[in-house]
Image (cartoon, rainbow, N blue to C red):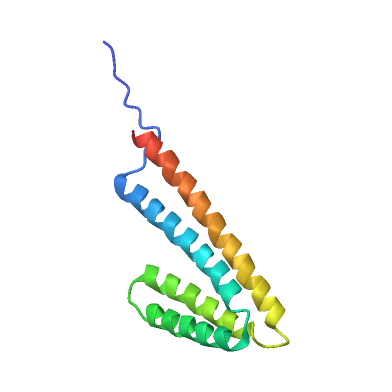
Length: 125
C-alpha cells in the first residue's frame, strides 16, 4: 500500500569521507610547507642545504611502492628542485614564483577538500 522511499542523498561512505579528510589536511600542510620553504630559503647557503635535503627526502619517498607515496614523493622532489633552482641567478625568480603558485594551489586544494569533507560529514549526521 504505502512504499517507503529510501533516500540516499549521495551520502559518502566512511572510508571515502576519511580519504577526503586526510587529503584535505595533506594538501593544506603541503601548501603551508611550500610557503615556509620559499620564505626561509631566501639566503644562498641555507637555501642550497634545505633545498637539497628536501630533494633527497622526496626521492626517498618516491621510491616507495604505494602510488599515493609516489605522488607525494614527486611533489616533494619538485619542491626541493625548485628550491635549488631558485638559488641560480637566471632562473631564481621564475622558480620562486612557481613555488608560490604551487603553495597557493595546494592550499586551494586543501580548502576545497576540507569543504567537501565538512559537507559529507554533515550529510552523514
